[in-house]
Image (tube, one colour):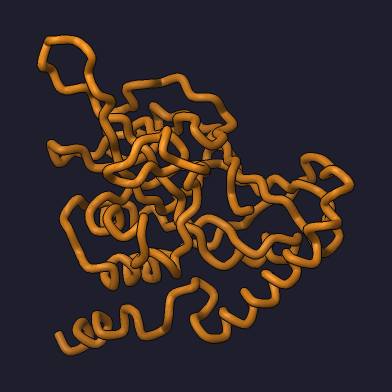
Length: 261
């Protein structure tokens, strides 16, 4: 299990002003966001303006409905973005999810057997890279009016930040620096390699506070060996792709072009 709970404890109106974005249509959000629940996200609307939009946490692939989902697609591994169901959304439907913390179950180290909250101050929110889709419900009346779109999103996940790995979990959200937001959320269609290069260029590793939120049920020990194995596989993969899960070759051509220019 990866990130299935995060929180947003910041002033969204102030955040919108700081990003020169339209404020969210839905100003009330629960501080803790669970799968299926709405979260504020930063995206470019059809008019080409930056807006804070409510999106359900858990991507519904294009052409599907929530009823057809076996489970909430809350996390998209950065290594698998070229695969279904992520490959359609990553082309031109990218967004940012602001958050001030996220929770992970931990399986090794001093916090083994607990769920840990990884947080930053409310006035310094993190910006997690994400992708989104939408679907429309069928109208049952004779008005012929098109139903409004329902937006859904998934967080992009990377090999764990050092603090998260140290505390017992092998993956974490892919955070970007503030100056990478506009480039990431551009609505123009672009190749996956270009999006990966943007992630690599603007990757941000925040200073996280780690706080034990609660003890897991005793059955966590049945999952421990499997999660330690995932950690070891992740550490081996990092040696091949680097700490971001993105090969070193990605973005090198752009860097060479810039140097020649």
